[in-house]
Length: 387
Image (cartoon, one colour):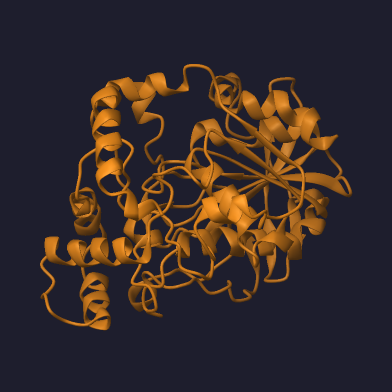
């Protein structure tokens, strides 16, 4: 099956950074037909990228799928990208979304490889498409990567997420997208249209809908779309399996080292509200106001101010306790994931799940053993948050 044939590349995706050192960024370009496509919103010009066997793939990098969520649109559900005139240059990666940058181990590639390698901006809702061979193929399986990063970091432009190798070796169309993280994507004041929560997940869904509407233009089959992700990306995949409005936007799913019923993956509406209020207090917003006043204040704060304080909203410090994550809002996520899974309220499709041996070793750098004990104690004392 398409899923099985892709497994070697999926499971070794993190090795592609080494392959990227074998070749320059791009081959010589020309306006050949395969580099120009016309989507529903407008035309794009892509770029040829080399592969280690002296072949190439065609890539379309930094395609806008949503209007920039700037100003009063911060914390709001994104709006689809408006049509443009002319030919959009899709030859380079987009901005990374604003996020926490790990400075714990300066110069250590094992941690710095996950930090954003593009300028950070709130104008970050773009996706990338890699297409194998030339001329452009027809009706290929599509694989859509959703990055992890604890819902506080991550970017589709990271070297380890270069989709050219998977596209070339497995003859699939590969897509990745940016989505908002941290407070920008997951701050929630449930019931408020100003900050409903889960907008990072809705960014992903909008990208998936874009794929349904446009991927045939690139040679992909919209009826053969497999979404796959790792850690928080796998949690995201799991939530799309659970979310009724996401289910029609893909066919199959792969969850790598994460599931939606992880204790760190979701919060209750009450806890989401508490964290939002605490963030406001930490950045100097007046207390005692209503949700609209709180959101207005938070929207006027510089992005870095929110990032600098996001870890302080937690009632307990632990490595696997994350500040801003999906909320069980009754809409995107209709119910507690555990309850939905137990009742079979999930998309009926082929699902592949997996973990890797010793994958937790990385977190020893951050003191995971003690933090894990702390988290266990906290969970036992605050079980109402998970019931």
